[in-house]
Each structure stands twice: as structure tokens, then as C-alpha cells.
Length: 247
Image (tube, rainbow, N blue to C red):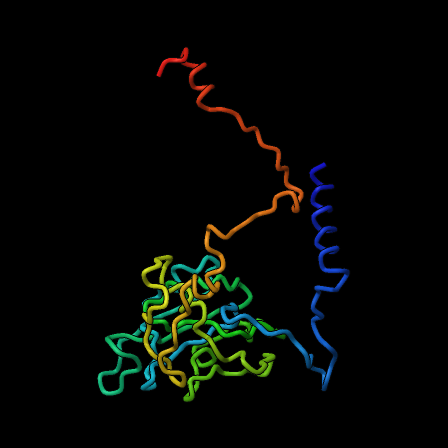
């Protein structure tokens, strides 16, 4: 019966929608060999990585290798080096001399983004890219670091669309509070080349329009096929019975 209840839930939802389609077509057609229509991508989408720069053009990566250490797929390889005294690449003593990501292994979990102490590694919205050789699948620093305008490098085998190169720090800003409500809506990151200091995401109550307050939540279990039978009884009476009626 459990399987049947699951199907009943689906049928009820179809009835609510009045038979309208809810599946979005992947593309509306082709134009010049490209998909010309696609749905909007969420701001926090986990796509192809970028290595960011500060507003003064210096690289954010300090070669600490925390991203490589936390990666569950072992797809990141980083080696740091001392900054040249006369021409430093990044603030501080060291910078990311070697940075590689093997996209044949990457699972886009974004743990590297959360581990980075300088917001150096973030992700764009690009997720459609393929390779004809293993060499192309291993992105080096020259391919990952943003250009002089703060935009991601766009390689020939990548299908970039408008907006894919924006909001590259969406997931970083979303996870910056680390679950602490006191830090929601607080700017806790440095500026990015080409974008400046990005605004924080709104607090959860503000994002929800404050319409999901606990007192306002009403769940209709019967509508979802979940049993609503209850067993109300006098707990006080049971307590008295179990203990001989003495308190």
C-alpha cells in the first residue's frame, strides 16, 4: 500500500495543476548549432571554478592548499611559492604558483569554496563544457584566474551564456554566516576585481517575506496521503493508573 500512496500523491498534484505541464523543455530549438533558449540559473549554482583577484588586481590565492586538502574527489592540485619582493602576485608572503583542477574528477560540491580563507576560489554558473582530450579537462591557473576585468576566461569548448560569469561568489556569500543567524546579512568578505564588494544575501526571514513563521505553518497531512489518525487519551489518568493513583 505504501507504493500506491506515493502514486496517489502524484495524481493529486496533477489534479491541482489542472493538467498543465510543469516540465521545462531543455531548449526551444537550435540556432547555429546552439541551444537558443534556456531557463534562468540560480544564483548559487555550482559551475566551473574561477580564481578571483582583489580590486587592485592582486590575486586572492595564497597557495595555502586548504582547497586541495578538503576536496573529497582529490581533483585539486595546488603548490604555493614565495612572493617576489619586487613584484608580489598576492598580498602576504606566498601565492598560488601552481593551481590545477581535474574536471574529470570534480563533483562540484563547493567544499573548496567554503574552505578558502581569502575567497579566492569560487564558481561561475557555467556547467556545460566538454572535452575531446584529457589534457583539456585539467584546467591550469592560466585558465582559472579571472582576466583584467574580473571576468572568467572563456575557453572554446565552453558554452557561456549571458549571466554565467556573474555572481561567481554566490555560494561563498550564502555560506559565509556558517549557520549563525547573527551574521546573516553581514558583509564578511573583500571586494572582487570588476565587481567591488558584493552585497550580502538577505536574512532568511526577509528572503521568505516573513510568511513562514512557525505560527503560520499549517500542514495538511491528509492531502498528502499521510495518515491523520491520532490516539488522544488522558495522560494524567494513565499516570495515576500506573502508580496506583498516588502523586
